[in-house]
Amino acid sequence: MAKLIRIALHEYRRNVFRRSFLLALLSVPAMVAGVVGVGILMESRGVNQAPVGYVDHAGLLAQPVAAPVAGFGKPVQFAPFESEQGARAALDAGKVQAYYVVEADYFKTRDVDLVYVHPPGVNATRQFYDLVRISLLAGHPQDYARRALLVGDNIITTSLDGRRHVPSGGPTFAILMPLLIGLVFLLLLLMSSGYLLQAVAEEKENRTIEVLVTSVSPLQLVAGKVVGIAGVSLTQLVAWTLFSFLVLSVARSAGIGWLQDMSLDWGSVLASAALAIPCFILASALMVAAGATLTTSQESQSAGTFFSVLHALPLWLAWAIISSPHSALSVTLSFLPFSALLTVVLRNLFASVPTGQVAVALAAQTLYALAAIWLASRAFRLGMLRYGKRLGLRDLVQARGR
Image (tube, rainbow, N blue to C red; front, side, top):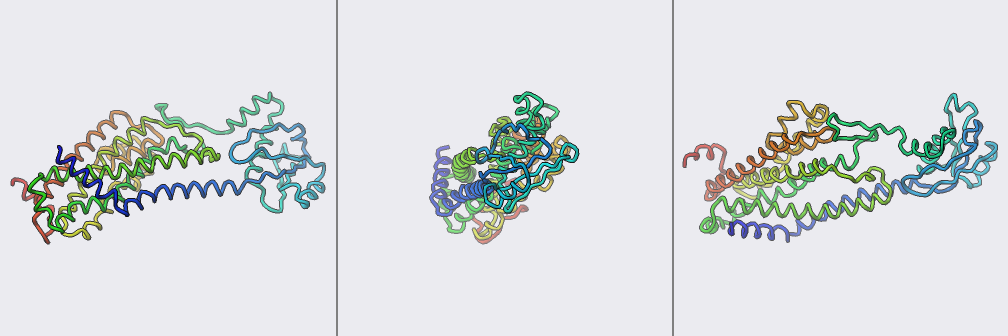
């Protein structure tokens, strides 16, 4: 165990202090900050706090009640005009950013005209729409009207087991969090594939393997490298998570609606995180095994995408999995290697995967990971002295009894 830990620490230090690792570590935070920053900029540019006029021919807004304000900005002032000529003069003078005309037959046709020189702010149109809705409830107590406005026509869809609640506006951050875990797993796997595939190829290429095999067993060497590189990926994940929560907190305080519900279904999150660990070890061990079968580090670099494609297979079947989360296909993919994590994540979007199935999937992935480590150590042992000769699957099978 002491040798395994020493190898893992060496592999961790060797990769963490590389310039490529630092660039990869900063890439995701920069991307998240850029996307959120653009979102905040786009929404803030659509805000205009200038007054908005209206001409009410139907008497709908005779006693307007202020509507609740959500998102960017403060309440917009709505100025009544007796005639369209007066509203037009105010628009031409720049006193209002736009004005609405509520037609006399509004209660029959629901027709409202909007007149502007430049498009009004998104906040202004939202608030006028809320003003109209709350005015239609003027005959009811104001508390009832405000409550109806806040709730609106948002229909909540609940799964049969009562554990999933999806609003009509679409999945919230809380629902999509497990899916984000699965996508981050794929990103980590893709970014660490180069380290994993070269973990043994470099030693074979520079002929240091002859020294290593005199002091450690193949299993200790392979397991130490897998653990060390997994630690590198964990470092990236922790750094990305901390930075992402910081950026998301800023975005939430800025009023982006998709981020207002930050509550989490910890059952789904923990299930996704627990499955991600053996899935990552499985892929890591197989990449090390692939590196042991190849002759040079250049050859090993081209094989990394193959493992990422295998793990991304459920994305190609996403519609079938989401529409029938408890079908035979979905359940089977939850237990198979490579496809388990994203399948369980996709099933959890609008349904709830039974705890027993999650436990079976976790046990299966753990067994797959242990078998992959054993296979990698076997490939390393058989191919460590085959300089310039590629080790194939037939060689592993034929050497079974040795």
